[in-house]
Each structure stands twice: as structure tokens, then as C-alpha cells.
Amino acid sequence: MSETEGVKAPLSNKERMTIDRVAMPEQAGDARAHNFGEVNLGLTYQLAMLEAERCIQCPKPFCVDGCPVRVDIPRFIKSLRDGDLPAAAESLLGDNALPCVTGRVCPQETQCEQVCIRAKKGNPVAIGYLERFVADWAQANPDALPTANPTQTGKKVGIVGSGPAGLTAAGELVKKGHDVTVFEAFHAPGGVLIYGIPEFRLPKDIVQAEVDRLQRAGVKLELDAIVGRTYTIPELREDYDALFLAVGAGLPVFMNVPGENFKGVYSANEYLTRVNLMGAWSPNSQTPILHGQKVVVVGGGNVAMDSVRTGRRLGAEEATIVYRRSADELPARKEEVHHAKDEGVRFEFLAAPVEVLADENRWVTGLRCIRMELGEPDASGRRRPKAIPGSEFVIDCDLVVVAIGTKANPLLTGSAPELNVNEWGYLITDEYGMSSLPGVFAGGDIVRGAATVILAMGDGKRSAAAIDSWLNGVWPPPPEANAAKPKKEAAVAGN
Image 1: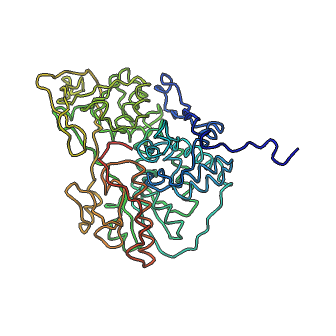
Image 2: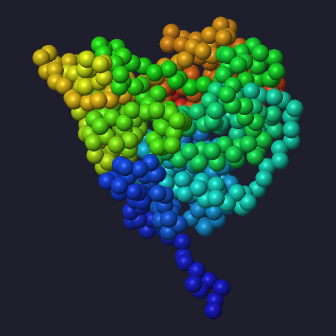
Image 3: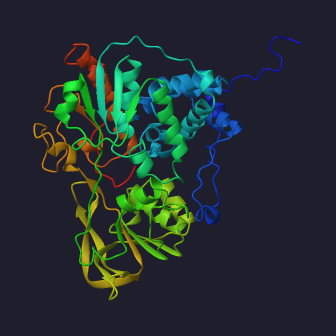
């Protein structure tokens, strides 16, 4: 037998262009609407290898420019295609501190996949699916990856918040040899990844495993530590050479309509936190949650989809989204909308709440809405909805969840008046992520407003590079520390 006999010849790019994008295996809609198991089941090895073949390894990879954390996408996909999973995993983990997370919740369709050259003539490479496949393999095979032993610098960095921005910054900084401690207000790490995103989209053991990996790398974690109460910024600044503030924007926004304080009205923050962090979906949980039979969720972002799909899983016979614009303007991921429809969620478009109705005991009985029409574009570029006089109608319901956005919580900033904030209470930073206090950096939703997990991670990665420069006495940082900073996007109530 010759040396090359039986070896498959590599495909040409012309042949690769004929391969259709693979579909993600998933639970059936009628079954998953009644359980909290993960909806997307992940690619098989065969499907992953087939999808990896679709990448044509562009000389100029626009997909990398489209990624807020600058993952070298062609490199990890080529290693996967070559059958070298350890190399693919090492490449991916070297660029991305939380790949198991982003492989599940990142909106790749509007980032890396949107600029994939294959999207010009068909479907883009399923980068998110491949990222999840490689990251899950790495999580299941930790011994196959090299162990980093960076030289310790003796510099201490405190990170406030263990959400996507904080964990990303921690992972980057510990690789540089810095002593990193993350302070988390809740009893479990993960921030919005734990309390905001449901189990059926992002299993909690996946998040915990990512945190465990960072801790094995040297990241320290202090839970039940409320900065602004347990510690203040000035106190932490005395003990640490630099700080990174990544507390998110967790204060809920309400509708300001009559009846909003009736029993049976939740903010999406409270509703999802009770279920996700406190396990209220379980019969054994000590945290109460109302199990509405007719649930209405107000909003059209990812948080709204998470809330309405959670309502279905808690037993709602009817689950409805009320959104003031049309389907074309929905800010939620297309996949989440598709999954919601498959699970029996009803959409009431071009409608806005005007009053919450209740019985004599102040329990919710309905939501009065008014029909809307779209006018001229507003500041977000979307057409502004206008009420149609005389078009009011009532949706019968016993539970209302308000998912129209969040804003900055003043708890942290109130304890450090030296921190400059804008008119909405968000921290003001310079181009390198430094706040008005020298050595105190910030990123994620507390700076940009409610946005996506991946944008927060991008902030964490860039800020970590800037912090490293600051600690090394190189200031301002070299240009690469601020490379590819994504423009600020319109706030979306979701992740």
C-alpha cells in the first residue's frame, strides 16, 4: 500500500461552496416547552467536521473583525477540520475566556457570521455551532490542554462583578501573571450568565465549569461581597494596584402605567432571578414563584424571549409577547424567536400596554393595550411607534412580566462620588476604559448600557490589556490594546 493510499484529499474551495450549512440538533418544541433541559443539543463530531469543511480560509478573515473578542476563527476551524481538537481548543481558549458561553448565547448572526464571505452567496459558516463544539470538547478534556504558568508580577487587581465582562478580564489578567480577585454580590458566580439566562439556553453547570477553569488558572473569587456596602471603592483601591468595575446594569425599567404595582406583576429581572439563580422552577426550591396560567411578557428583546419561554415551562397554557413594533423590528435573536414560536408562544405585535387590570384583591386579571402604527425613525434607527386612538383591547392574563430594559444601579457609584457618571447613571470612561479615578477601569453594561454578553466580554478583554499596560507603567497603552473597539449599539433588553 502506498503512503497516501486511503488518505482523503483535501477539498477545493469550489467543492466546499457546495456543502450546505448543517442544522443544530434540538429538542422538539412540544417536548421542551415543558422542561428546562437545554434546547440546542450540540453538533455531533460528524456534523462539526462537515461544517468545518465549509470554511474557505479567507486571506482577509472579516469574521475576526466582526468578533468583539477577536477570536482567530479561521485558525481554530482549520485545526478542527484537520482533526486536531487539542490545537483547536488551545487556539479558541487563548482568545476567548468563556467559549462555552459564547458558543451558546452570542448573537453570531449579527457579528462574525454576518460578515462571513460565504453569506454573500448563501448561508455563512456556522461559527457559533463550531465554537460550542470545540469549547465543549475542551471542557470535557481538560488534561489534553497545556497548563500555563505565567511569571507572577506581584501586582494585584480587584474586579467587581463576576459577569461576562468581569470574568473575561480576570481570565486575561491572570494569564499575564497578575494576582486577581473577583468580588461578586450574589452567592453564586456568573452574574447575568447565572441569574439572567435560563437553564434551557445556558446550563448553570456549563457556567460553573468555566468559572472553575478560571479558578484553576489562579483567579480568586469572593462571594456575597457587595461593593458599595461590604466594601467601598476607596477601600478596595487601597488594597489593589488597579480595579475593574463590571457590575452590569441590573436596575429594572418599568412601564409607568396604572396598575403596575398589582400582585402578579414582575420585572423580568426578578422573575428570571427567582427561577435561574434561586431554582424556583424546582418543586424543592425554597424560593416562591407565581405559576401563571396566562402569562403576558412586555418587550421584544432576548430577555423577553427568556421570560415568556420560562413562563411556558412553569406551566402557562397561554404565553404572549406584547411588542410595540412589528416583527421586523424585534431586537431578539432570530433563533430565540423561532424557538419561542415552536414552543407555542403567541406574539401580539404593534401593541403597547396602557393599564394593568386586577380584581378586588389586587390580583392581575388582564392587560389593557392599544394598537400602534409605525411612524418616522427614532434615535435607534427604528420607526417610532404611535398609538392609534380608539384601538384599545384587553388580553386576559394572571401574570405580567415587564422586560423593556434595565438601567444602572447607583449602589456602587453612590459609594464613590469621585466616579464620573453620565445623565443615565452609567460610568464615564476614556478610550482605554479608565474611569475618572486613576487606576480604576470599567466596562460592560455599567458603561455602555444594557447590551449583549459578547460586547461585555469585548470590553473586559480590552480593559484587561489596558490594565496590564497601566500596571507595567506603559501609558497610554500601545494601539493594539484598544484595537477593534466595537461601536456602541442601541440598548437591547437581552443577552
